[in-house]
Length: 441
Image 1 (tube, one colour):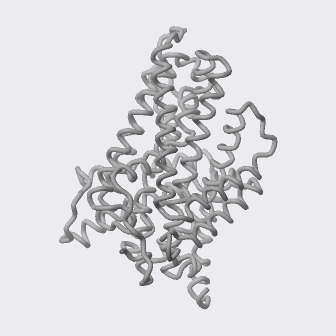
Image 2: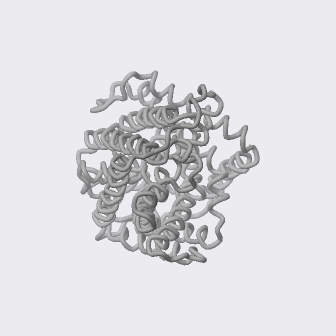
Image 3: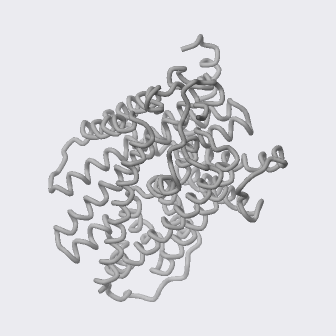
């Protein structure tokens, strides 16, 4: 039995029930949402040829793998619930960890959950040939449904995640096979233009966003068996599988639509399937996208609730959120609080703007988590570790450089959104001091 949070000793703790397969499905499910079905068209508009398109996805995959390798060492060092929050708390102090958790609570995880639940409703409607005029109440129903599943503990949530992830991989595999068999893309109308560094940089940003999400397995490390070995294996295997899926899917789009056709598409997966099977094909891939987004919602809820539970155990969130269900070992109060806030965002429709605001804070939070690796290597040098990120410090420094570049480009292109994001992040500081001075809640 493990502790539910290092700030509070409990008689009920997390149980290690997830094996390597479960953990790998968490990694894959946390990365693959709707991006690979839609984002390649945006990348094509920023690139000058199919080769450049593939290069962007290959570089994005390599950078994401570097991030996953760094998280693998962190997970092996501290295989407890809470992920990045725990690493930041230990390396840089509770206030830094709180601001990180504050962003996850107010915007990042809750906003993503509300947004992707809405996307799920829209694609589920498209799969059945129904136009959903107002997806908001159905998005709320989706969030409540997933909360109910995860109330019964990690085995219930993991079983749902495994099923949804296998189905989404099957949908991507079908898309790849059908595209490679059908082919028939028209030849390019002009010779490929030389690579434009600025435009190529713009293409890499959405690619990297599509590769994000591998860190959810670190959030649930307290429920993984043999975590020092399982977490690194799951992260490496999961990210290699995702990269292979993304590269092959892009190759399939190019084989059927061509680079110019891909650039002009608003929904490349639907256009590919429609070209081969007509409207029935478009509805079929809409079902695949719906399944994929539902899986992302599920793992986002699983990971976020563990972070908020540890915050509650540390006394920087509701104390009740720090407790686990005595039978199911689930962070049931944290789940409910997360669901309530996400439902509010879904009903008001404010999540889109909040997610725009959160871009800078999200990536800076990821950079801060990776930076804890330098602290662990120095302050815990004698600590036995089963996995170390290779080519240290080159790889983490490269990842940090890329993140800072993304943040700089985002600030340059969207200064108002970046400014609002900074205000949301800074708002966490007075909240922290107020919360610490309140009586036990």
